[in-house]
Amino acid sequence: MSEAIKNRYEFVLLFDVKNGNPNGDPDGGNLPRIDPETGHGITTDVCLKRKVRNYVDMVKKNVSPYEIHVREGAYLSEHHRRAHKALDDEKLYISVPADLLPELRDYQNYPEGVGFEDERIFLRLGSNIDKAKKAVWKLKDISDAAKAKLKELFVDSKKIMAKKWMCKNFFDVRTFGAVMSTGDKTCGQVRGPVQLTFARSIDPIVALDVAMSRTAAVSVDNPDDKGLGARKAIVPYGLYRAHGFVSAPLAKQTDFSEGDLELLWDALLNMFDHDRSAARGEMATRKLIIFKHDSELGNAPAHVLFDLVKVKKKEEIDGPARKYEDYEVLIDEDNAPKGVELIEKP
Image (tube, rainbow, N blue to C red; front, side):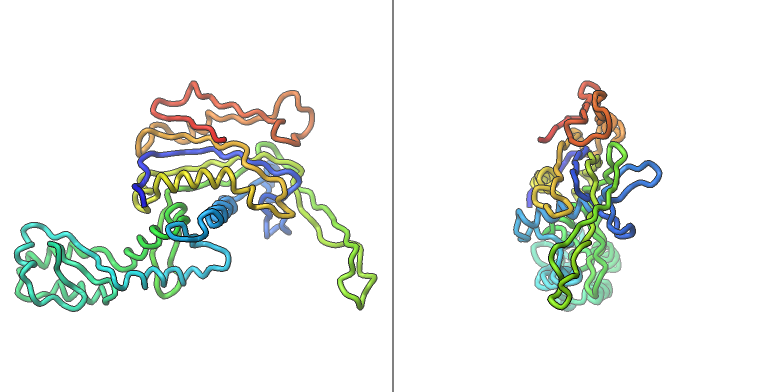
């Protein structure tokens, strides 16, 4: 894996739908999600992340370090078991303060699962770590001061190491984070550096429930069983806007790299082209506007950057918008804060 990213990012994602359902509401008969107060359409962050995961899965063939944790047909707890199993033959090394080296280097009675090599003390992760730690703290023939310092050094656990293994091998864990507390082998919780908001349509939408007719009978025993078939919920047209955030400090914790970031941009641009269905025949990413800070913590508040991007229906359009060209996207590059680079894709 390459080095973690060092810059903060925010981005605006614009995508549209034509005669399709971008995100059905299971509590509403799978009708397109809608804000009942304003009539604006909604697409959840979970829906968008699912499409990113599917794209990465397709492009990278679900091979480490680009495996997908939350994947159709996968069992989350089995991934956690794999993490623990993979660590059985590995060692967790702890650097030793210089004043302790002579005392620990020559020590001969380390308990099972504990040892000393390369000027470092280690725990074998396949051992009972808690038991090994307690044994180290009770070592005989070393000073109380040495025991106290050792106790401070042994802070990681196998669960923490398993969490790092999951971040290393699973793209969506190191990107979006995960709560990995299922099963008997848990891997803790990861806060992902990449977060997305709900997408909201620029204008109110109309959610249509379209009836379909069926000319084929279901059974030979009832040849007259024709007529009304399934129903399809669609939005005639909607342009949606979502905001996203990429945190450099959190990227350090998960080793989210520059290569991962480029793969994320690629997924956001192309994910709809590989997500066709009867309900999502015409969906497309129309624009990805990225704000790159020249520092880790950022050079301007996110809301200030988002306010630089205005999307509105063209004045000459009489009636509801029915295509992307009915809108204009205005980006106020001249007022971009110092230290923030604006990048447009495509």
